[in-house]
Image (cartoon, rainbow over all chains, first blue to last red; front, top):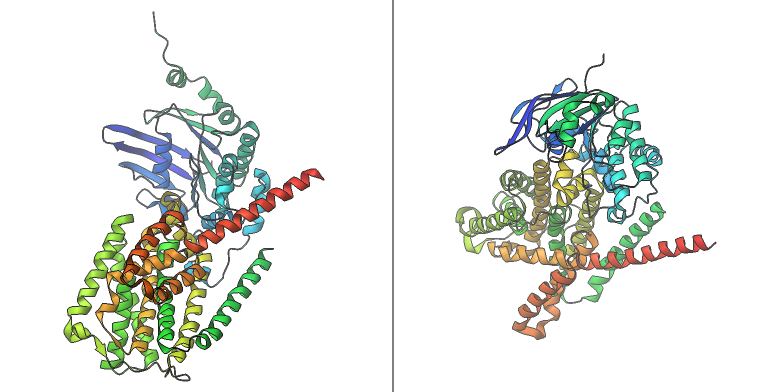
Length: 252
Length: 330
């Protein structure tokens, strides 16, 4: 069996009295798509923020491959291969599309600002971008303002940006929210490509059909706790999951 | 297409620079006015540092006049008290100012947003008071005089025109460096800090470190300007490096457009020369100036360059729409 690329061990996070993450364990394997699902407020996005380092954990450990990253700041985790997208796409509003994509790769190959200043460009950017853009079926003019993109395009482009950096783990937060069926299909194609290239994908998504058709593994959260884990079929029939989503039947 | 545009842009800049260089000394026979234009060029060099911090990084700073003063006083001390060669003095003062900027930046860049701006106001006041009161080193209120003329080994400056030619070469070189920074990974890292800090750290940008680097770069440009100012004026006092001077730098950069090097240049020249043109207004000048700044912030927050860019983009969009429409038609 392969070793997990991302491993959470007993991760805890409290905001005052609210327990957003309650001794959570799970592992993500390279080349798999691992879904985090759960009702609203279950602590899914908090989990991504803990993994990417925007929040620091109160207890527990996070490992990226062989490396313990629990105490590392977010920018170092990113350089080690932690990619992510956001629920509402986060771009550099006053920059064009090219700059928005280049920033994703700039600091990954440790080229350094001085070498970049001297014109040692990033190798293979154009061809890599072309390949991803074809899968995402995006028609881009790289010199356009980022603000000229429609919502769906910007959601797709954010995944492309994360993949350009060739991460080890990619955290994807509700990529299909607000997208139409066609665009959802393109998101799935991108995620499947990422998995095929050996990236461990962590996916938060509310569209259950999308989760069931793309994911290898599902972890269900409720009130910051893992209530179920397993492959899609077993999750569908798990009592705890049904209870969390639909409520408990009153026993008469 | 992209290459063509780039070449066109470079050509335009070369032509403008050449015209400026050749025409200005001929058109202004008056030594006093050449002095003003020289000062404008030095301010431009200093403001280039500001355009890295504010234009790219979005960090409002009032420290520019302070670091400019550090550079000027280092140069004066190196030349007058230690008898260094002017070139050595320039180099030495830029390096020394960068070292000081590193220390100051490490402390100041921990602050965010408007706190950073207020911190930089405090800094420029502290530096001013040190320059004004540290008599044994800076000469107190009299400053330091007797700075030798600029001697660049193969070119020595005796007239104001000589200085003009040196300053314009340095200004163009500095402008090119800043343009290069803008399109390199450092420029993009700074832009990410300006636009979206969360996205920045998730792209691997070390916000604190990048801000300190930009502070050091700003220190380098402003100290170079201060250094050259010391040679041109042959005497310097703390009065040249006040908070008011920093505020004027900020307005100059905003007028031209902080995100564009050419914009900064135009803004600096305009605001330096304008008081001379508006002599008729006498003491009402400050009133007109103040109202002008308010209107500028409301209607042109990105300055003249921003205005030009908006118009350009509108035309481009219209062209694209037209092309699409005709494509559908055929």
